[in-house]
Length: 118
Image (tube, rainbow, N blue to C red; front, side):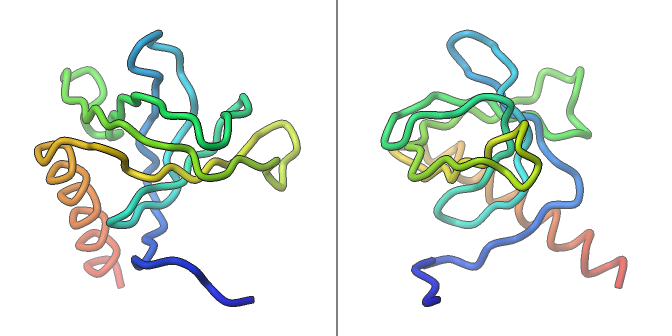
């Protein structure tokens, strides 16, 4: 199958926690990231083509008040291999430059950690 992806995907070892920024509801965890978006594993199905405002907290920033808030469009949402969960592909939509830079820093931090452990 031909890959339609524009950007290289980075699998995350430490999974940032993802919340709905409006309701503060825990949605799930981010499992991979790229320059165009990310994938999350969630307990509830997310609507395809729906926009969400998400708040992302890196594991090392829990309790420190450091959040990344991004607007995404869910491109797809399917049952996970573990059928009690869903996986959703989130495309970064109308995200502020500051949030994009914070996500880029998160990506770089993960790349550097994985390279230093090899």
